[in-house]
Image 1 (cartoon, rainbow, N blue to C red):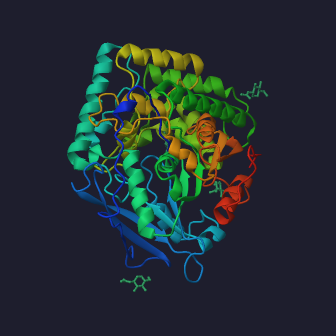
Image 2 (cartoon, helix red, strand yellow):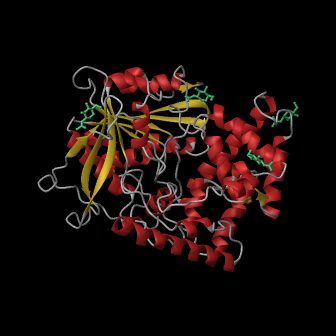
Image 3 (cartoon, helix red, strand yellow):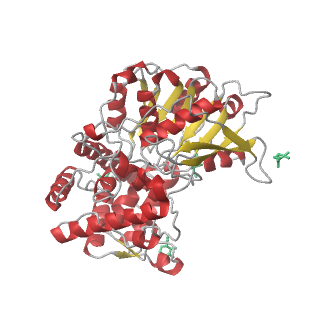
Amino acid sequence: MKHSIILLGSLVISDITKTIALPHPDSSTFHPTIKWANCSTNDPPRLQCGQMTVPIDYGKPQGGSMTLHMARLKSTSKGNAPLGSLLINLGGPGAPTAALVKDIAQGEKLFSDELIANYDIIGLDPRGVGESYPIKCDPNMWNERANLFPTTEEEYEKLLDHNKAFGESCAKLTGNLFNHLDTAHVVEDFELFRRAINNGGLNFFAFSYGSQIAIQYAEKYPENINRFVLDGVVDHTLPETATLIAEASTYEATLNEFFSWCNTSSDTPLQGQDVPALWDNVIRKAADSPIPAPACSAAGTCASDVTAQDILINAQFALAGPNITNTWPALAVALTQSAQGNATLLSNVIATTETYGGWAFLNIACQDWLHESSSVSDVVAKNRMSTALFPHTKGASESYYAQVHCLGWPAPTSNPQHMLEKKALKAPPMLLVNALHDPETSIMWATGVHKQFPKSVLLTRIGAGHTSYLGGSFEGETRKTEEKFLLTGELPAQGTMLDS
Ligand SMILES: *[C@@H]1O[C@H](CO)[C@@H](O)[C@H](O)[C@H]1NC(C)=O
Ligand SMILES: *[C@@H]1O[C@H](CO)[C@@H](O)[C@H](O)[C@H]1NC(C)=O
Ligand SMILES: *[C@@H]1O[C@H](CO)[C@@H](O)[C@H](O)[C@H]1NC(C)=O
Ligand SMILES: *[C@@H]1O[C@H](CO)[C@@H](O)[C@H](O)[C@H]1NC(C)=O
């Protein structure tokens, strides 16, 4: 499936006092409206595109505005959608959602007929993402590839210099928006959207990092929630190390599931082999000297050699799916070829434009999560811990990526992780969904968020893969349970576990 759902990670608590509470957009000065029009001259039936103007900086709401873009697939019912609008967010941060809704309108079967009959489905690209003024950065600087595992003072300083210079290129090319990308701003945008569509409480189907938007929305506007489903849950309250350990441990555990799957599945060239040893060997070889990626050299679209860092980071995406029926066999092929000296399938993409999609992740994560290391010895200590606890994956998770790639970043951490305000307790029962072996959003995070919203129901899928709805089959019980809640408001029993 071509839509990527990515996660995010990292955190700490000491800087909490620096959090700036954004003002509530004042109803007397803000009259949010959405201008709907055709998306193109030959739209499929029922597809429309919308635009809504919002302030760039809610701290200075008169100081400049920007336009958010969205796509809407009108319900197949005659007249108005029986259940109103359902806002979708695919997460990332940085995954475009308007494009997903356009694909559904073109006939891609991602949502069931019942959901499409009962709701207008809306994909609103958050600020800096997709069609909503995507963040721009210098591609050449990016392609230099930072070493995220510094072991010397010199390597550490080089990483910080790289992060700073790259971030400054984003600031220069993106303009004032660069400093106002945090999730607190996205929450205000979504509240303006809710007021503009004017159908009472917000219905929100949030995937992965989208759950962080949902949670922060629930913290600020609990009374404005109707039905919220959070599929693949991010906990934005934990310190940095706890965040890392949560994600890295489920990455490692899911990789072990993959090893067992390889052993037994006829769908892989690795069947019957000692796959853990093969994996460790590939990582060791790549650490000694990068493995060539010959097809990349020919095409120029990916890097011509592949480091251990690249493999550790890129393999996590393959394990995540969300449709692991596709991506696990692909990972097995990638590892087999890498062991033979061809790591093409695990090579990094080369950015060729100023709007490469992967940059939103970093730009948003750096403003949402405190980056705690303050010396090379902090980073080395963290990696020593990770290598001891997670011997195959060494902690190289998305959380780690943000924790080290944000060091030296030129934008402030304006929305750091924090304990939720008491007001959040007013949120109505929400449905939280997480797989046990989700290598990106750890079951530990879902469990923590469930505790923060005692009225919520946590539905656990006994299985692997990141999120459960989009990669799951229409016959899957988890998927059916999510739909039932969206269609009827009926929640599963507390503690429900499903194996499909
Ligand atoms: C918008 O699209 C619809 C359906 O394709 C078409 O009937 C209509 O004329 C279009 N409107 C405009 C203003 O182009
Ligand atoms: C794979 O299978 C072999 C032989 O059946 C067994 O010894 C080994 O422990 C298995 N490995 C894993 C990771 O399941
Ligand atoms: C390397 O792997 C890629 C991807 O599977 C493949 O397209 C290419 O032909 C391989 N190249 C060599 C030289 O084996
Ligand atoms: C997942 O991939 C398999 C294999 O390509 C495919 O048959 C199945 O329909 C996919 N599932 C979803 C939900 O896209």
